[in-house]
Image (cartoon, one colour):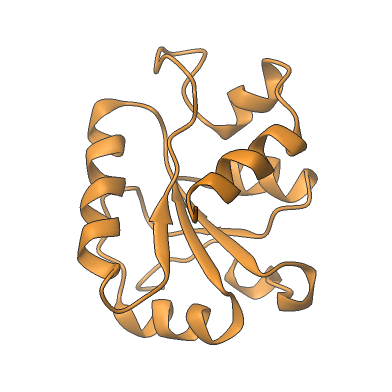
Length: 128
């Protein structure tokens, strides 16, 4: 389907006031396993139709872009935050990872021993 949105049908708004938009299916499953609702579009560089952000904003107070720590993905999350911030309550969060092959995304964040509590603190700092 166009656009492809992995995780959309599994969203349960009562679970959280925050939704995470991430880069891929594995990332969504890692986030879900730690209690964070998330969705992913085709890729980090996908243009997100505003109608989906509008729907998310009706349900969630905070919309977070959480992408890989590769330079292209970091630039894209910055671009998307700047593009959508005037109309939606969006922010980006960069993981404290070096952006190398085995240390680049939310799955690696958890695999390296970081916790849900640490991620929650990073997400909360985005709105301070």
